[in-house]
Image (cartoon, rainbow over all chains, first blue to last red; front, side, top):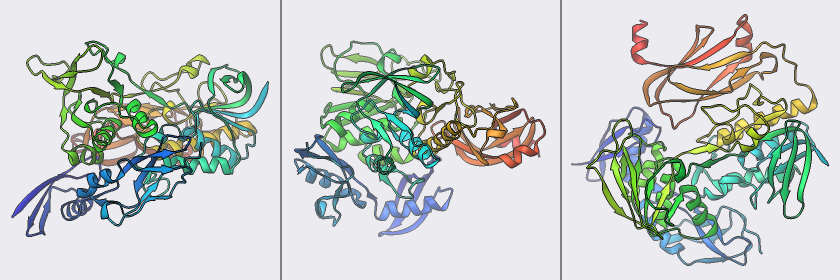
Length: 121
Length: 428
């Protein structure tokens, strides 16, 4: 049996959670004060995901960079692969909020979209 | 001289929401003055997500949140000037501003909304000894450099202060390939959200050193390293606990200060605790027809509450301009922070002018577990709300209802205080 300790992010209380796992099945979650802690622990242990936000260089824009994000959350272990795939990518102005700038980043099936308009210079 | 009904100083989240609300309440002649190159304020550099859960029921990035309010202001056809610095406002609401295009110019306003936001505490405010090499930045400056200008301020980083901007920058610098060696926090707890501790530090194995501070800065031209030391309960560094960290950048995330030079200049009364204007139920300052909202009034943690507060200021300014503000009969209820409550915004209520519901915001001075917010009307317990946890980093709010207050005869003081569980047991 494996034990994992987590801090719940549901509220400022920050409960110390202990998750007991056996062969990828969750046996128990303890230490939580409310149901949110239980839900968070189960997700975080089996399938932790994050939205990744960063910037991309812009060519011919009135700004040097455009902020971007993964449209949905991606597996946590893919964060650095995603950042590597963003390295050196340069997009052309104009860019509109919501434009897909890179499809299927790091094989996650999730697109990188712009989060701000950048006009052509 | 140009004349507008309403001049709003600052085109960040507060200014934008205030402008939209004033227009929706019938004010045609509105001008927003913004010193930066675009509207949106600090949100433009906050490219991370987590904004707008209250306002839009979805999780947006800072630029997306700002974008929605900018679109609203554009659709409403509200006038604004960029690259425009307001340098003085007189008590009779004459605004002096300057820009490259127009030079120095004057605007006469009927009402003014102060929405200038806040700025970061700097190294100078901390008295950190050592030389003054390049490489010491406020966390917000570094954030602007990375996220808006496309520059990396350094490769090896130490961060002082665990407020949310510091935590967010720890992650951002790491993602861009820098090594963040430690985040030091003077207090025994972090001022940042739990979510940020986990997702910005724990996710990347960045150590958070509580009860630690920077005691020396090494390097003459460029920063070479910093010395961290543990502090005692009084915040004094303890000899023998020093540890040297080599780094080329030190980011300071050590607090925000409302930017009230203009407010002071025009004679607005400023609170010693919030460093923002003292306001009444209409978010009106000590000068009639001058309103304040957002971080210039008191520093917020969530932009959603800035937008909400700013809308209220916009509505109040609209009522003032239209002359439908009821004249106060002089009866004023004071809102008094006691036991554990550091401040309350607003600080007074005129019942005649109060909207049906009034959101009162405040902060506690320490971490409280299993305590309650108690509200007393002239010494009589009126409400008691249990909270599992309250912390200085999380703004609290309660809602006051006009109908309820009208039932209290000759009410003079509303006290808000924190009562811990023991006291509750004692009361049986």
